[in-house]
Length: 492
Image 1 (tube, rainbow, N blue to C red):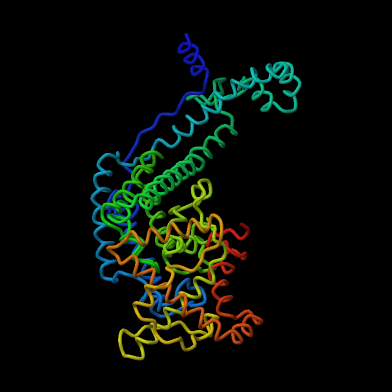
Image 2: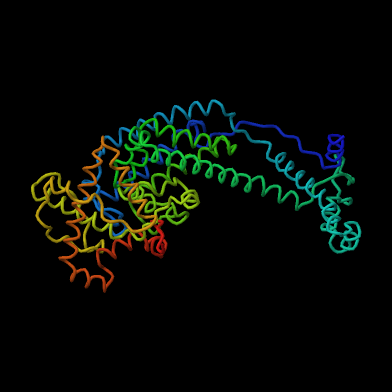
């Protein structure tokens, strides 16, 4: 009975146009779209990475660096060659999975656009059928109201009557005007908006939510489970100072599970076609590279679109924040909903001390002629040049020091302690030595800052102090408010 009523309803609707489909021509002939979908993310990854690498090696925009070149050279526990090798392995896996995924997808076609728009117009007409009943529920007589409005607002009267437009005329094949069902102009217009814009936007939004959800919970599991972390995820965290082309530096299994499989599932759930998937996969790749670029560039639109940006994710790569800021790659809603966002306040002091300690080690290498490192211009980067340090601490002394400075009280205390334990668990990558070295560097940096107190005070009055300069680079230069780029909480 219900099916019969629905059939009668559809019979009173305007007829749907006929159509004939054709294969969609390639976006870039002669490369098929499915092949281009595999190539574009890889091309975008290396093009954007090499842009940031070019900025790095030429020391451009040092005032927007999150870390200095000395930190990149001295704090990371993996060579650049190993990073490139593992990224290429992941991209091979990504290409194989993408090829298999493409085999399950039909080829994109065109020619049925008018039919699809008409289908959405039908759905709008069907939705109008509920209006008289809704008005009756509210105590309003739809017939009387429509009769009152009809002389001045005939279209509105038709909507109120449930999509009844008796005066619509279409042209017959012989050129005569005949009365027959037809869609109103507003129905066709809004059906086109839904089909061409709203549905694709919803598909991309669903894909983003699925990817963020998939990556958050698997990424968090990799940190919460000691075996998963030490076996797989610790490889990515050998980059304490991330750089652009290290974005996909992972264990191959982790790269497949978190990145490749997660994006493929999102693509399927969102119901995207091949060309939509091309932009979705490429956009996700660009966002991931940008999150690891090591720069807080004020003109970078990706740094403004969401709070999940290079500064936010960089906190997660530090030894004191490694068990916070799990969200990747688009938004931070899971971190905020589940309380895993970094809550230790302004991190500028921590960054400044790491910068000073790394520069001291770089100066020692330069003086000995070993492994010279380009250093950012202190004047350009708004930081003062490092002063002489105290005599070197011996390894025994390092091991006797606290492994980290005392963290802020409360929740941040637990976050810092958990992050420290995560580093200690990673014995394969020298977990205790990493923390001991950082503790020694922390002490030396404090000594330096005390020695140069007068210089720093003078610089702070003109807003060019090293600490202020760093805060400007990693916070204010992006959103114009303290803590925004790093996703920190200032009042705890």
